[in-house]
Image (tube, rainbow, N blue to C red; front, side, top):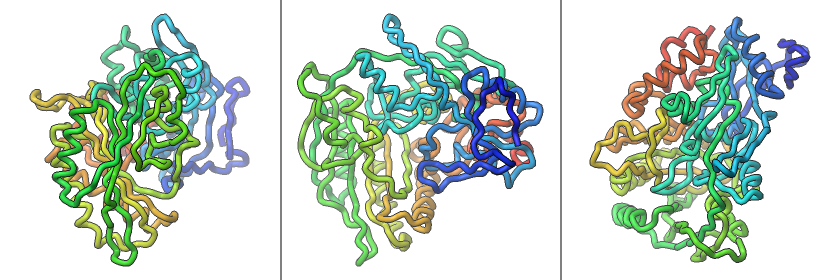
Length: 480
């Protein structure tokens, strides 16, 4: 049991009398057990905790809100190690400073995306890009490459211009565009492997007013025709998301029935400053009465992203989200859909309900571990990525069905990855293959060199990172 110094002001939950702390992700199907949950009151307390644990080589896993489908946030379970293992939350680091002259906001790692956007709205500021939902911790979301949709906008990590990070020994390092600019490319999408990010500075902009237009389109079982039509629409609309095609589970025939229609939304800048009404229908993430033709006006935050109260479903579901050069989108989406249909006979567990294809676009970047990094792209390509997402949604929470759907989800990358230069969204059903990771993330060796400097004893590395990134030097550390 950890006995902290009073000066550390550490909160230890479930650590009394030697009891352990069990962590779960948002869906409660990914879990681990550690010695304690640590929530430092400030950066100094976090540094002191790290300094105390470094000689012991304790396992340390920083978590946000657990909004992920994989094992990226999993601690090293007590059953697998003789060392101490801790879950660390930086939820108490809630300082914030807005600089309207430089158009930046600096904030502690405890801020969730929703709370941060509410503060920005009050100050007539906004982000250039947000994810579909605003339920995540901001640092956690940025560290995995969370994104929205737009061929000329990047993921939310691309807005980061500086940060403060503690290494495994508790030493502070300041990374920004003026100092260590090259390393900032590693820390933007850090995967939790480079230390405790205690503070971020991001670029913001004045409030953007957007018009969101939703259109209903006819589906066809000739998927090549449908996806080529969608690809053409991406050329016409810079910022667009497509929800569809949709498939309903037919319990009688044990197959997926194609719904006759699907819908898309696209966003355009507007100078309309009347009633803001997009938040009256939370279709930013497909919730609400969405499959109808309509338009609305709002600031970009509420027009293109959904707050926690707008999340309409929390049943179990499996998901993949794959990024590939947009030039390959129509062919790849066609083959993904036909492959899914070919696998229907094996989906024989109960409570299948809905399967939704979703599609977006995203501007590429130079962050080392960003799924839309452009380092290995052919120069003839645009540097814009298409995104294929498949959601297998259940009628009721059933682990057997969830695990079967997740097993299928893992198969898409090995089948299509090489053909279409596919990169998976971190922490969303991506099978471990360090050789493939190196191919799609050519800056991985530089990332791992920084990782070793920041974490000599592999205290921040769990099994996911070890296998996904091929951190062979950590093989003995995570199992001792």
